[in-house]
Image (cartoon, rainbow, N blue to C red):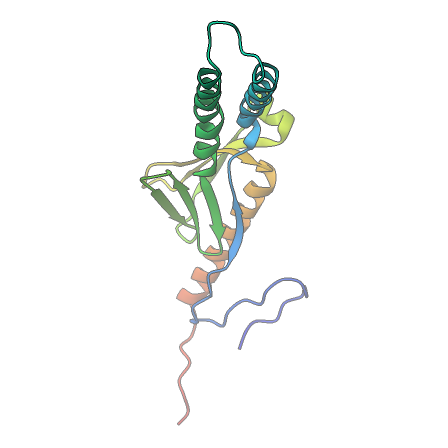
Length: 183
């Protein structure tokens, strides 16, 4: 049996002693504001190739132009995009998971039930786009930094809510009376 909820849109809490299902609250990547320069480079390379493809400058063969354009696109567009795409942050009802790496995947988990402090830092450019850096510190492990989090205020509130709910459920379960079958 679950506990009644005054709000119809919120999920009901699990019964005391029952394990709660882990649900995904949010999944996001760092802010993509660093990819603006990559987009500008891509447009510039496309324009230069479009202009010089039919008649390259005199001493340069056409294939060298295409090779240089491909190299520039790979190094200045695809590599930054892949680095951005390889970072993900996932908030669940039990923990926060930070994953990074393209070929060698790194993963770091921090459970809500242990509790942690949330520090928020926002530079001038981050404030302009609504992003920020969150540092989660539980006092035991090394702090977990979530860099360039989009909608940082919303994520901060969601993390604080998850910590509070997890600690309330853990406290309730530690003080619950065991249910004994009457059979």
